[in-house]
Each structure stands twice: as structure tokens, then as C-alpha cells.
Length: 80
Image (cartoon, rainbow, N blue to C red; front, side, top):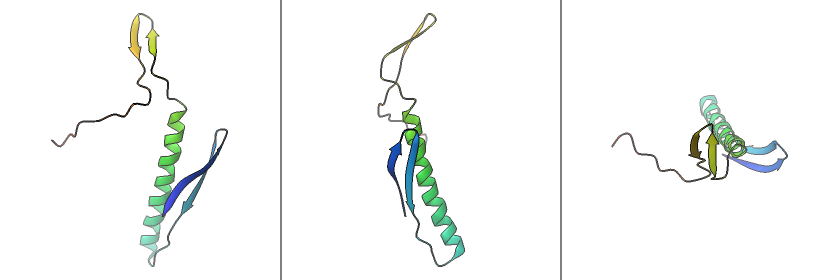
């Protein structure tokens, strides 16, 4: 199973999915769900890129902040 972005045409994404159909309907449905979720994740990632901002100063009224940009984040593990 795989999902991949084939090309981008303006604001349209062409995504190809490959699904292995299994011997049971339940297994086939789970395989379809997994690959469609993967395709959705790829599309969401591309959609979010439209709203990314470069790392620069942001000023709103008297408040000063800074955009995060596309930095790698390391989040603490809540189970530790």
C-alpha cells in the first residue's frame, strides 16, 4: 500500500494510491482505510504549507512576536 503525490497543479494535488486487496472484506477495508488516511495526511501537509510564514517579526498592536517558520519541533513525551 502506498500513497504519493504525483504532481501539483496550482492549488490541486494529484495523489496516487495503491491498495492491496486482502482475502477478507474486513482486511480489505482496513487496507483501504490505511492508504486513504496516508493520502489525507499528504494532502493536509501540503495544505498547511500554504499558511507557513517565514521566520520574521510579527507586530500586532503593541505586542511583538515572532513566526515559528518551518522549524523542527521536539515535543516532550507526556509519559515520562
